[in-house]
Length: 282
Image (cartoon, rainbow, N blue to C red; front, side, top):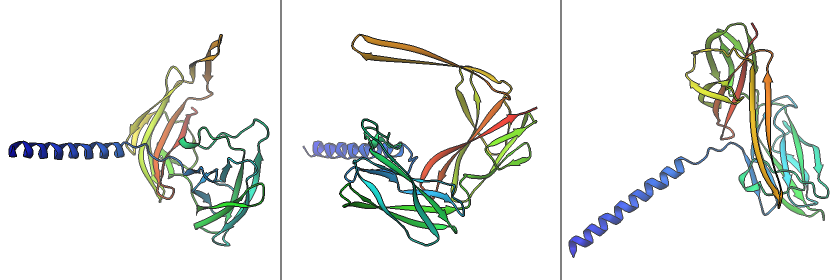
């Protein structure tokens, strides 16, 4: 009997250990975070909790606020410093059966927002700022407040420049006459580069990417024409069923090769990609 109890104890301990391993594995395989959007169902508001903005420029990431309750609106906006100006520049109110699709959030895919607005910024100097906005309902009563972190920086891209065949490029569209050369990047601070990949069109118009090492030599694409076939079917309603086939033909002026940088934004704590196009103009 003692032996049976001991064996049972070992079996239970083993089961617990396996459960822990499975739980750890599930956590490790969780999808990476790709957006700072969040949704407060109680208040009926979706917004970005953090964003980057270019210093001393009106261009950058606007703060988008989506409101699910009819009549709600952003009443006031305050910043943590005079160095950051925030202003609601656009407001959209949807009437009758119209609605705005929610931001890229799994828990707002079925939410029909009644209005949304855009807040723009101007940062006099670099820094980390806090923006607080207040929401009121149609009776002008306060629904609640939300805080957003704004990082004012002098750069947005994960890399300072992309080098191809010995020449440095600072834009996302690159023109060259060299059919092959080494691809190299220099990362910007506050970004962690996860991988670099080269993409080319397949015969069906899709793009396949292949990971390479930094400073690897590549050959540029030579083809310009592709045919993309798309099929879709909708059962419709009752006996009203239909199907369709869509074919798209592309014939670019010059062959294009894509370079994709996968990175982690250490400020926003999200994963994303940046794609550069290299055109062989020879």
